[in-house]
Length: 66
Image (cartoon, rainbow, N blue to C red; front, side):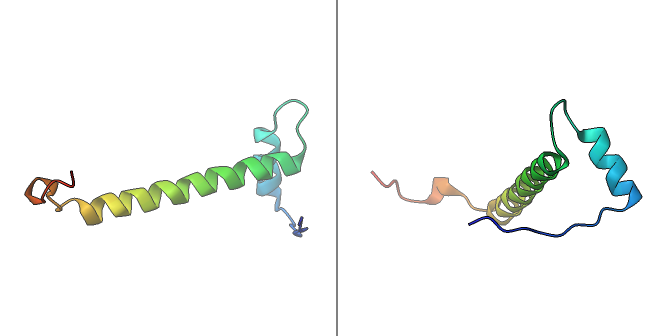
């Protein structure tokens, strides 16, 4: 199911979108790429938080699973 999202870019937003556009791309393509980058940034932040949370874990003290 595809949803439509209204977006009114500011002048600065328009400049950023125009600068990021590749040949043959529409503005919506640029925004989709930006959303993918945001998703990756969120994933990286979560991975770093997990790594920090687990940094004190010492698996060498655990019994082997095999």
